[in-house]
Image (cartoon, rainbow, N blue to C red; front, side, top):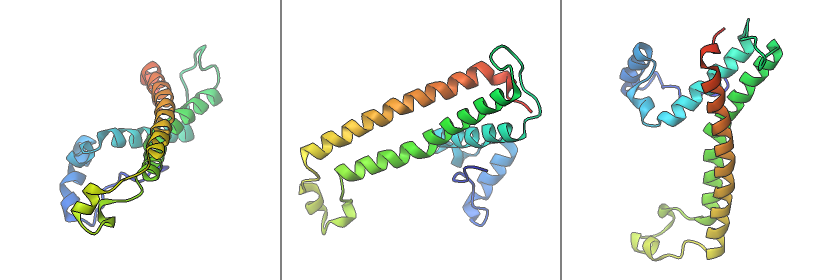
Length: 157
């Protein structure tokens, strides 16, 4: 699988119920704590698996060839993966530039509350980076879910 970040650790007893729920219902309470990420992980892996193992395709004017269909599945998987992994990494990177210190880096809560976190310029740069990230996020989200919406009944092998 391409993305393994949302697996449940079978060695931890607290996940036993979650594993049972996921086996029985396809989703667990633990999965709903970050359902957006869980859903994107399922789409990332499922669409890639379909592209890798497909034996047929919904032959149509939009998908005249098997290869074109598989490429579209891979693109949708790439979009889901980007949304899942890249956005979090980019947001965290941009945030850490603007707010380089964590609360535990200060000697006391008073120092933390009274500290100048960053320069105004760093905050402006952070907000600009987030706008750029959000623009790309919207493009990929729209492309992914348009593909899913238009092809839902064709997502089979």
